[in-house]
Image (cartoon, rainbow, N blue to C red; front, top):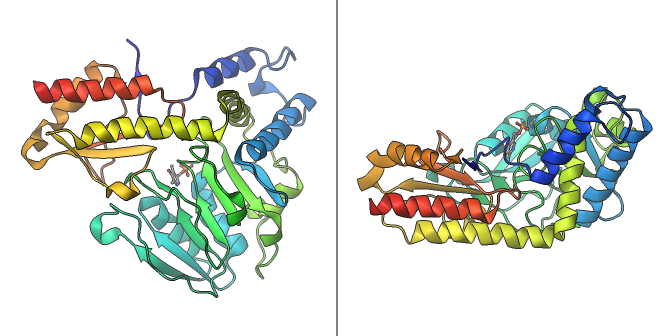
Length: 354
Ligand SMILES: *Cc1c(COP(=O)(O)O)cnc(C)c1O
């Protein structure tokens, strides 16, 4: 049976990415060797690295003065690399959920952290607004898409200090005005590639301003200077990422992806809003287009397990909600076809009518 993959991460990849990856595992770029067994310093892989950076820049329209680097360690390592490299005395953070909290915890190891807004008291069902950012903060950190709670900041803030964003789970879901950010990072396993590579878009002139000594591997400058080749990069995930970027370009770029994503999300949110049985968990104006969280209304709550089983019987996988929200979470990343969302909505209606 065809599976409809709603996993939150690692998550669905395009058929194009999978096919090209399988091909390269067998024979990479006509070398007679697998992508898994070739030197990262081979000219064939260097070409992959160069093209991945170039295409990242092209798709997101990244201005001059920024570099894109590909690292190991996941977005979680960025929670520490960001303050290591950018926090001199004080940083401001927006607390929008689990991932934001993990970033805050690491930053506190390096200096003063001012949490300027938090929606914790309401279980992170909205994005805080109307707060002030201290003008003497070295940077302001946001998590644009809260993968667990299903809220999203779908605009580029104008702020008075350098802006840093974790875009792990919504990069390439809309055009981003990169010039408004000092640094953007994310794990690739939500919207780009298999797990193992982390992208960092960094404005070069924000580096080198902290007083502390930074260990070589945790220093952005190391990787910027060596074009992500200081040590062995995650060769295969970078290859797969490049295939996804090529697929994005072929589809027509981020504006087209944005339309597709918003159409899928609207389709599912409409079904949730018109349902007698299901209800969304997030304030409508802050709803994510990537991770759609919903639960059963109190009077139906005991049917949640039955619905999960019913969905499974229809080939729908990965919709169990995160334990901190419960219920259901449908991740509708770029590679997920609208058809899968329709199958889910159909299953919801059928279950409701039973
Ligand atoms: C998944 C996720 C992370 C963690 O990524 P790792 O690569 O597993 O460290 C961080 N932030 C957000 C928003 C995420 O969705």
